[in-house]
Image (tube, rainbow, N blue to C red; front, side, top):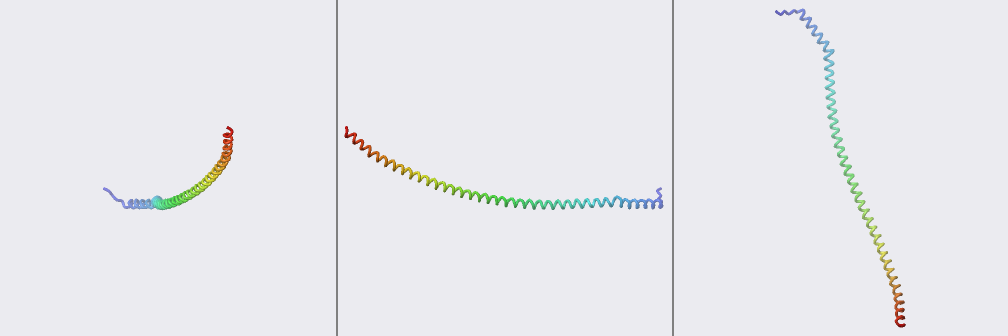
Length: 140
């Protein structure tokens, strides 16, 4: 049968407890410390990732707002420049139309003056021609 020797049992028990104490100091405490640090690092990294995600969302929202503001300002500037260009175009066309009207009136006045001169010249020539025709008819 199985005999339990108390002396060897105590030696083995003391040996087991000393080995357990040594392994605790050498192996288990550093491993537990390493696992704790790893868990803290993972937890910290997850927290940092969540913070970065929140900052990213805030930055995207801010950038979208700034982009929409810039678009509205650009649209306003475009509309302002467009209206200014239309006004400038109207002024230029009005000025060109006025100048063209003045040139046309001057040309008409010059043509009328030249026509009047031509009529007067022809009237003087008509008198000469009629005198000459009368002389030729009288000689015949």
